[in-house]
Amino acid sequence: MNEVVRQLTPVQEIAAAEQDLDAARLGEATHRVRVRYPAIRALDGTAPPLAQRAQRIYALALVRAEGRLDAQLGWAPSGNLEWAVETLADLDTRRPNDPRSQADLAEARTRLRRTRGEGVRVLEDLDRRDLLGSPYAYRALARARRTAGDEGGAEAALRRCAVMASNPGRCDPDFTGEMALPSRSPARRGI
Image (cartoon, rainbow, N blue to C red; front, side, top):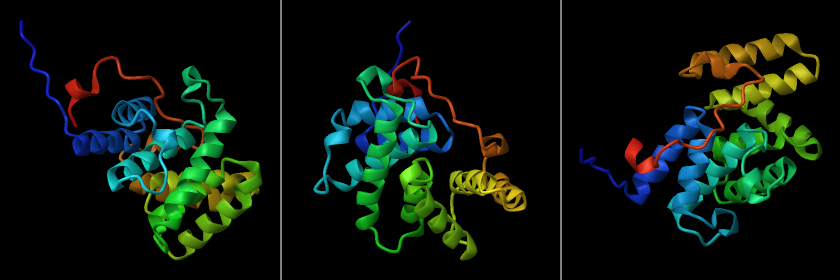
């Protein structure tokens, strides 16, 4: 039997990685990005817009997996989270006053002890102005509020998360997503 393999364009591949990220298929999202951009961690501010979009996806996948991806490449969770915060901070400087970029960076910052306070401050500010556009940002806010002993605030953030999420189970503060690599070529899966 002959199987037709659909080859995705670079834009389609990164769009599929973004869909994987949104669906919490973190291993698949990072795999797609690494296939398209093997040196994703070495890209700088001169990278084209599609590569910057791929960096955002890759960094957020690492954050949402608590840094536990890429061990096979020699990266420790703490190193992954540091890289993600640095990358998202760099991307944020190129998009001033962009609530999505600010929320992405704040979500990442809540994962590191040294930047947690700033991350929580930004998430709280965006929430007060009703500018959090991601269920993952609400989940990060809920986790931070729970850590601070604000159970009512945590529950309110989880309710907002559940309203926004395509799968309310992703709003569980302990949910980390699927970290397995794809079992077959991403080009065969399509978008």
